Length: 143
Image (cartoon, rainbow, N blue to C red; front, side, top):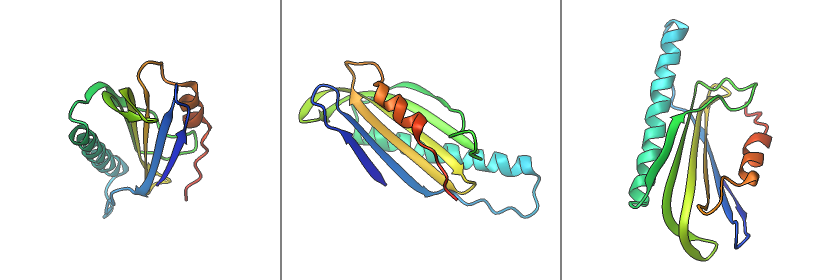
């Protein structure tokens, strides 16, 4: 994992990226749609696990938005991507305040990796342009 911090006191952003192996799927000659369904199911369960962890660690959190999301990059073979947006209060840049926190989980990137993003910033602003830039400028070449 790696963490990035934009240390501005007015518009701080915290981004953490985790990369770990996607759940393994043993294919004993199944049709491709069966394998895809198995991967989608495992990816959904992995996302739910992260979702529940956030709600446990931040009991005051409420889910603002949750949806499937397109694959990560044009060349990715991502089977499943999920997104959720949360609102809660926490200390960020030395000040306790309302925040928005984003969770992106992309499974089977390069057919075997999961990439999880956690992005947190003060709720007083719209999604910062720096977050959009960061998410769209990463070129993943995990092999």
